[in-house]
Length: 482
Image 1 (cartoon, rainbow, N blue to C red):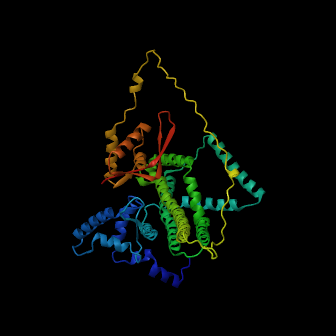
Image 2: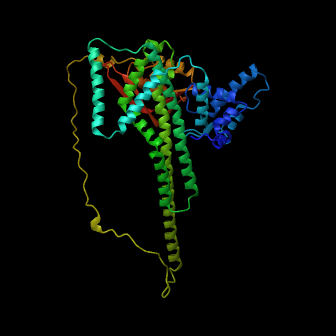
Image 3: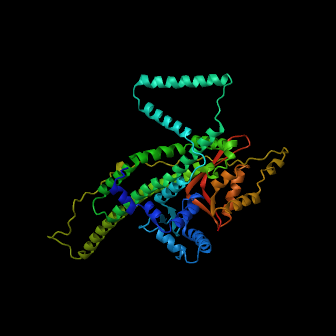
């Protein structure tokens, strides 16, 4: 990026992030948005909920500072922060709600992340980052190498290195990372994971801008339908074929792989079980960081799906208008025929039709009749054996404590306003398998505070009594506090 005087001046005047840093109420805005969105890791918050949170914050500030500070109402502040001239919040209407919601903009999230980086860190690891840099350079050089001999030589060297390590381990020489190296790598993992999560907002914003451009073009388009579709698909290909688009698709394909998800979950579980990591009190949100990635990726994919929806509606409207025009022509023919019903024109032309070309369907083109295949249904009634059997097995089923599951939900909603069933089962793993999952669904269906989001699906995973991992895919279930 160029850092010339003019470029910096443009950023200083127009960039939302710089405007936020220059705002008089920047401490209030940044601290509140960090507390509302970043710390609980929420992608969007309803207007009423966010107003309630901001009113609490303003009340505390007026009590601690003075009554005159921040005199405006919470709703006025939110509307101001979401205005196009500021761009610190994005105000939008979800598909399943009539209430506006708010989300952070990428510029605001970058400002918060940059301010966090200003605070001094007690431990700055350099060795793991240097190793990462070396590994990236090796991948680039080896991946771009086209000479077969060189590639084989590099792989042979790597193979020899692995063989030496295996031989050393067999001889009892097991190299183990010390606690400093483990903590350093965990910090690097934490930083990269959070950066990746925040990058989704930027990717989603790019696709959302394209969606907005498509809507504007469709609303004002007066040319041929094919020209519009060609232009829209061309712009969409530019996004999907860009480095950002292809990188996101590769990331999404890898993340959606069941084997990748299982491996990632197992690695996370093992890392958090290490004494040096657990004793450092790591951020518990990292335990489910891959689910946050999935949620953020789904929102991005949903934005892409909106593009297709816009095109489909446009084509439907065009087909409706064409059908309407045809019906209008047919009605005009009928009205003309009625007008000359008793006074048939003899020497004048009754009606002109442009390019009359009727479709002719020959009778032999029709397929032959095929009778439906008869289904042989047996009417034999099976009789039960008269031998005695132990009916106790029918009643010896798994007992699921419904009150315990309800307590889990209440306990989780004490800290957050809503929680998904998937997140709940991550924190409280299913011990009774499918029966426990069905009980959660029964609890959700019995209260109006729960929401079944049919447009989104979530996979819930558990381990059965035989040690095998099971997975159920179902619509997203959200438990709400109020």
